[in-house]
Image (cartoon, rainbow, N blue to C red; front, side):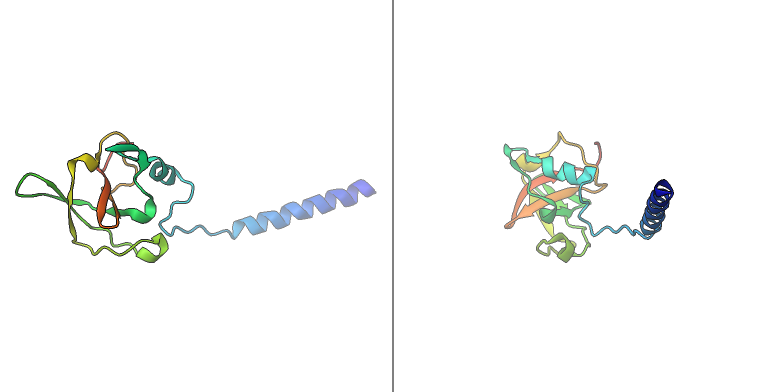
Length: 134
């Protein structure tokens, strides 16, 4: 008889767990949690100083437009229209043009974000990662 009560108890726990699991809703606030992209962000190091990180997601902006300056320099154009508050980053207006120093361009880590990413901190370029490759 005790076994029957125990079986009913365990079964009811499974039923409750099942119905609770159905109501779980996912959301993405742009932070990527512990996904592959988040891990990619955490492992990026400056190309000119490989012991220093490129900063993090709160310093990253999409710059999917690229121009060439009069002296052949690379100019990144900010195209990131995501809300800054969830990413905890300072605002940089869409259309802002930033000259990228050649020593800040990363060539060796790929980019799984689907966007060109520029890392800015205190008005300086820390890293610039082209789109593509993983």
